Length: 584
Image (cartoon, rainbow, N blue to C red):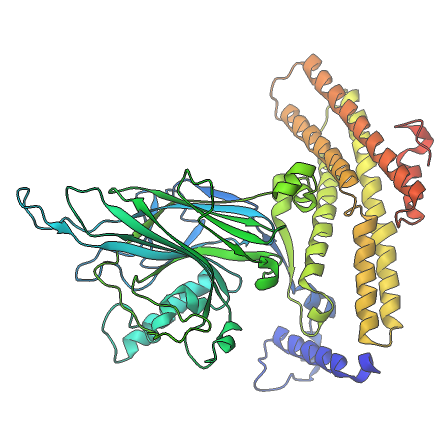
């Protein structure tokens, strides 16, 4: 009753009707879908509607921009940001009293994976003001100057959408009565990173203190880890305020020498196991300047653990509306003559295993991704699914991440299988043909086991369980059992066996590449080629023996496996071809 006539069924019917109308080019606020034969013949099948919700995305595990000379395709510039001299400059040095104009942002075009441990680093350089009009005999005091910017991580705004939003703000400003310059764009906070909604930011405030020209300058640096979230507005007691509330997670202040054209390095480390964020300032910094206890996966609504990363410029005089604070707040703060442009000199991001995982080798997720295929880019592919309500109650973000692990595993085996089918070998090269047959046999048998013995059989049981379910909890439980069966029987919960399977795929990749070299006509002596092939064959046989040994041990001990594992063992080592001694 609950599934057939309750809110669950009504929501599903509503979403299906809306999807069908949109697929025919009709909006939701107007006419109805015509029932003519021509219209019904244009109806999109349900399978196509469901498949249109899937997207394959490339999320790089790491990137490194030592300079921005060739980075035009990797980043998106918003506002007064520009690429110049191999650096990304935020703000402009225009005429007038303002040292930087109102909006400048720099965003990476692709998302980054934040749910796992990572290390993020960037270096920056502050542009000093023009020299004062003092003579050498009467040196004048140099005024205070600096900059303020934030490294931002946010899951919702694509860089292209931010650029469109900026153009819309400019039209609003030009059409209004307020044309007073920097900071006066409709809503004053709209030019800052806080207007992006849900966002984690590392703010850097860098101020060079007033000094005489003959004295080495010193800068005061303030580092703040800030969290902006729509739910924080209610905590401050003023949810109607236009500017989002900000929570300070950690902060630190320090002083550092600030000679002209000095480049400073900032590092951000995330430990997913201990749920910590650490900020380091300076290339030689060993101890963190500040540390925040934060579970990124639970705090932010990351899509498959990923978010956009970028930089945003702010005025030095801008004050956030902090949660629970009763201090005065100004929405529109113009840039002053103290504000100077800042250049991002370098920028990089890379995964980082926790100390415990590095010590005992228990970093299963990082190890799995690093060996998820014979090619590194497989680990960067992800399958995204736009889950319509109320399916998010069943297919959660954690479920999507588990589906992605399975997707990368199947993709790696399918890719190896196709590569072996299309490899070109000389007819008289019997050793290469024998090795190809062994590799193709192993890959095809394991892939058949995954697709038929595990996925197809489990999917049939899932459909039967959903069809005979009587409550929503029964559906959730059936799906959890289905997903647990897939991850267990596809060896995703057995990291040692999983790594050995990936090692076999890497051997396959090396074999295909060596065959491609021979097909390209590159000169390789026959003796050396045979030696390389025998070495690959020896490594492959040793890997298969290790796989069979682990599978036989798991089969004897139970470990939640089913009878299909025995059939896989029999097919892989029929007549003891590889081992001759493993008992199945």
